[in-house]
Image 1 (cartoon, rainbow, N blue to C red):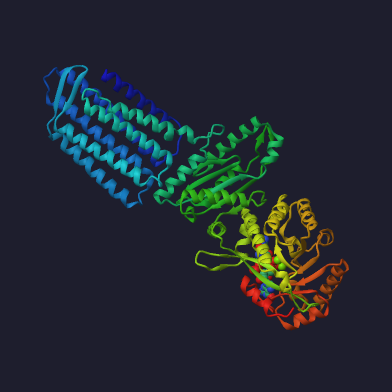
Image 2 (tube, helix red, strand yellow):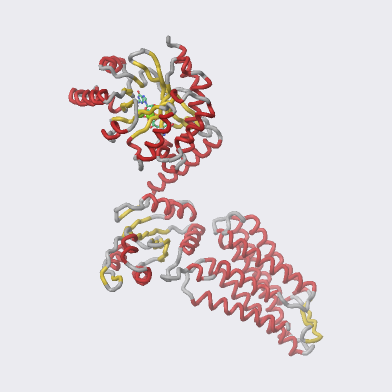
Length: 632
Ligand code: C2E
Ligand code: MG
Ligand code: MG
């Protein structure tokens, strides 16, 4: 019975070895470590069978040969524990001191055991085919050594749980538990020899979950897939190996999808992948549909590799036997160390491809400058999320002066973020990123609610403030629900809607004016007013000015400054002012810093002035003091 079990184990291991070796697969360290563990399982199973045969054949007359075979089996068991120990830790990387020390000790122990076991006594118990086992000092030493490796493994699994590939962690643990379980049974009942078989079962489990080369290969093209790319990158980072990469993307997949059937495209892609495989001096991965990534070891000059690929791809490609129009975009990554690990590299690649999706450029570079910008964006995004969660979004107010009433009649609400150290971050640093990530929706709501509460709590209308101007971003305007959300806040805070003026801007690329106009109408209906911000920044569009239901036009600081720069500009801007007045709109001139500017603009009947001349944007309390200091 024991022999049959071991033979089954041998069959399983041989099958796994064939499956692992006969399919193309990237030569990952994990795979090598797995094959070594498989090999030691096989050797130990074979020696197990041989030792049983030797004991049976000896019929009680145990020569040094019989004992030698039994001892070889014991040594092979310790080697099995050692190789499994190596496999479990292989992911973590040689840079880790714990792993390095651990490896040195593990190697020392295996050498020691291999040397001493031949010299320690071993006893053999045999009463029949199914009741045979070895015992004595050599067996005890074997158990002790194996137990040491198993404990070391468990410690690695516990300490590096977060750092390890989760699936390897789970598979390693199951393998280990199976072995512990089998050893316990064999220890308690010497005649059940199942350690070798349990190890074979464990390796089957690991193979299915982790080491099956099929899971790294894309069925249609036979190329390595996304998972393989990730595993390969992880290994490069773990070993501290710098690589360069080339991303090849089809820019016209829609055109190809429309023109050709899925089958024809599959045949074409198979050809394409093969061409890449044949010509490239690196490892080709299919990153996703229509996108390939080729990795090159540091020694391969990227320019030379690229040249070879260009030549191989520069041919007439046939789909359904006719020439097909193919547009490719190349992105070069010279140095994988622009990211700190595989995960951030993957994230960067994803973000880069997203940023350039739809771009018509054929040659791009993902370099350190881009990576730094990306990292900064990530940091800012985190900072915004933290600020929202911890109520660190603050609103400053910049007073707006009426040239007619000669006092402040309104103010613009301008957002800032307080970072963790209490430093004030200006909107220029985070608004663009908040718009890209959609976080501007939450910021916008916070600012709107804070401004509403400010109006209401401080009874600003009694202090001569007729309305507050609040900036809206394009992302907010494009939202069908914006009006509803704002009306809810207005109701909740009890503010008079006439005290609110929302600033919209043309530079923001509103994708559908339908939503914008719908929102504007609903809010205007309850009394909210609107102004057009950033007028004169190059996006000014007469249609906007005439079509949108606005009351105010806000001259950007550049426009205000330009008015004082030359006669020609003054004349042109003067006629723009006349045109706006003809449309019965009022003007706010932003960026007024000098007294003469205030005087001249008052003389040409600009209704409102905003600028450092009066005050920079200030916190609530300071703004209230500014109001207290003026006569109404
Ligand atoms: P904006 O809406 O055109 O706001 C006017 C900007 O000009 C403010 O900069 C203000 O401090 C600055 N400014 C005003 N007068 C002067 C002056 O005399 N000299 C100079 N040098 N600058 C002056 P700030 O506060 O840095 O805001 C910059 C931009 O950030 C704003 O331009 C607006 O587009 C955006 N922003 C600010 N708060 C919000 C907000 O709550 N939501 C949204 N979506 N955008 C906001
Ligand atoms: Mg504004
Ligand atoms: Mg403005």
